[in-house]
Amino acid sequence: MSPYDLGSSVQTPQSLVDPFGRTIDYLRVSVTDRCDLRCVYCMSEHQTFLPKAEILTIEELDRLCSTFIDLGTRKLRLTGGEPLGRRGFMQLVEGLSRHLRSGALEELTLTTNGTQLTRFADELAAHGVRRLNVSLDSLNPDEFRRITRGGDLNQVIAGIDAAQKAGIAVKINTVALKGSNQADLPAMIQWAHGRGLGITLIETMPLGEVEEDRTDQYLSLAAVRADLESFWTLTPLTDRTAGPARYVRVEETGGKLGFITPLSHTFCESCNRVRVTCTGELYMCLGQDDRADLRAPLRQDATDASLTAAIREAITRKPKGHDFKIERRGAAPAVARSMSTTGG
Ligand code: SAM
Ligand code: SF4
Image (cartoon, rainbow, N blue to C red; front, side):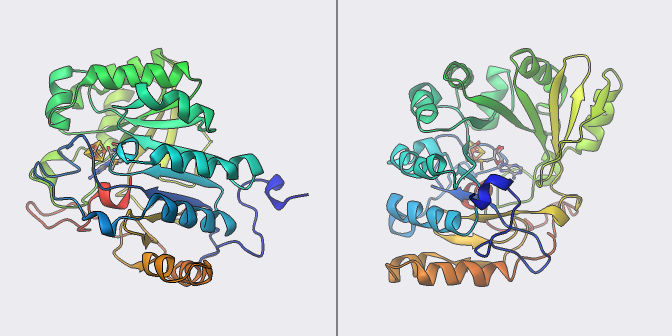
């Protein structure tokens, strides 16, 4: 019997286990830093993107992901920037789907802004993608255009329709933004649940330089939750993931609602994940700057031996927890790289 038959947190001799005994079996990989949108909390309006030579090729991304899978990664999330905007992305998904068929990988999923899902949903489903996170911060076309600096809401809604039609379960990710989508959050939750979609609210994180002040964007989810509880009954659910989301059922809508509060430390003890940027830097924690270069071993050693050694060494440096703060007005971001580089 394969050790994988026993479930996702099983340790094998190959497994990556950090100094705190956490099995690292969840990998997020950013496949590009580029995007067709410019969300105000994520990028600056005139974002400069990385030179192509610095970005891992599709073949390198496949080798990197496959090496992690050999080391026990069970869940793989591809993100960006906008993953569906990366040239050759479908080739990568098709290639990685071999690990789903072999049973080595439990789940292959992506986080997308949804603008190109009408084109790609069927292909994603055909390659074994069963779930998608679609980021959507407003159902008001004008506010959506403002937040994304030019995005077309209808394109994203059509994309969600296409994904659902293809049999892919969609979860909506909504960043809670003070004074922006704040008043519309209950309507968004109702809309999502009415379509059979889960929805997760996210607090803004101090990642990268953007034009707006973080303290102006930051909306505490504790306050949002208290507001929702003034008219809905939220029943905590026990299906906690190893990640930062905590879930409730909204009794009135019957749907599932998540809260991601990255600024709290409540999830670090069970953290099972690491992230790789589109340039091949492995970050052991989203909120810390310590990292390991995986691009050099990928490019300098065709055998994967150096890559495996570099990954193993980096995991010995995974910190116990992060160090986010949004305190002082005008303060520099806690972490200089943006989410579009690290991969959300
Ligand atoms: N472009 C894709 C998308 O928007 O879904 C994938 C990449 S995006 C960086 C991944 C997620 O990170 C999105 O849900 C986005 O809302 C979130 N995100 C970006 N910057 C953030 C920030 N500073 N704080 C909190 N969430 C952020
Ligand atoms: Fe692009 Fe996603 Fe960042 Fe918005 S959040 S700018 S869609 S990468």
